[in-house]
Length: 266
Image (cartoon, rainbow, N blue to C red; front, side):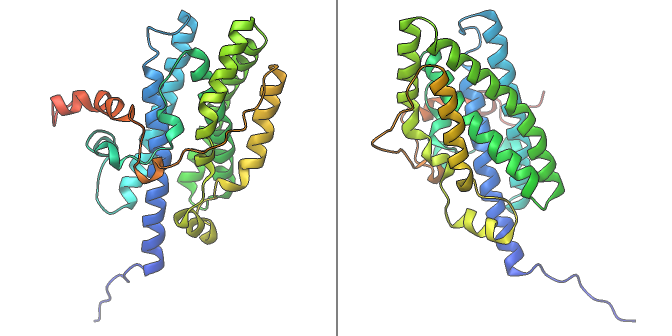
């Protein structure tokens, strides 16, 4: 009787897994960091209704992060869990887009940040649901797209409400757009990791969705009586672990309980 051993994974498969782990980590970090930022509005939002709305949006984002970080840890060969990735990495190890970590500012800045992110996220998750060969990841994309569509509606409504409100609310909303717009291009950047994944048909690249994103956010901004910013510079670096000066305190806040009680369970 002869026995055979399972064939070792092909190098191409190993590289695809490693690339996918990197990509999912980036998406998970986006959701986790933005969710943490929105949590800072709890008890500080303009109204009780907005306190609840922003809390629920943050919960959805943390849920997305849990799924994405779990999948990333499964693929990267380290065996790290979602908690390991969220609570034990240094700030330079996070790969979120800089947009998601920007300080909340006043309410209009938060609305502008949400407007940019949610329109991007809906488009990308829809593309993931339609163009991902992995059934689990495609299912996540379909679910996340539906949830973020409600976040997008919330941001659209507030953009119009502030833009068409008082002269002061319009001024603040325009200032919020001007503040966050230099950070939007990084969402659509395509590097070697994304090019290999897209070429292999593993996941789509976000780059092709940028024109539709620009069209959709422009329609919302224009209907609000505001102007789409045309920034003279674009911020990048988050995907490579280069973050803003406000990011360190945010990570410290996120990880404070885990670091105070290592190994604790609830």
